[in-house]
Image (cartoon, rainbow, N blue to C red; front, side):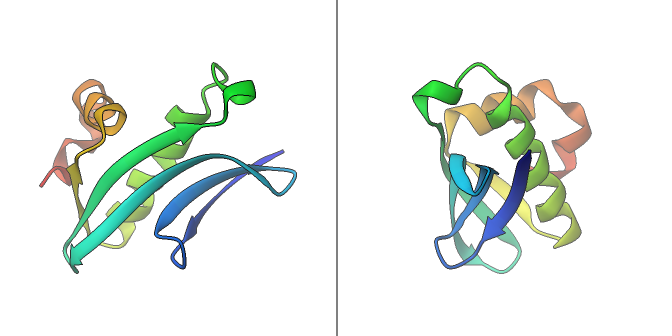
Length: 92
């Protein structure tokens, strides 16, 4: 089963399958009100299973709860925000 979590010690969101991190989103925070999403990656053998999509949705929902907005440096996240209007309010 895939679990999703925020790992503040590594400044990233993670998707883990049986405790192995199989996808992650790196972020930086320079302001309490915003988070810069810098990079999204899925390990090669897990690509094509929708993990990046699910992890991005998880991360954006978490940021919404934390009242933080998103600066999307990552092309994947930028595209996700462009195609998911339900997260438009999170753009910085």
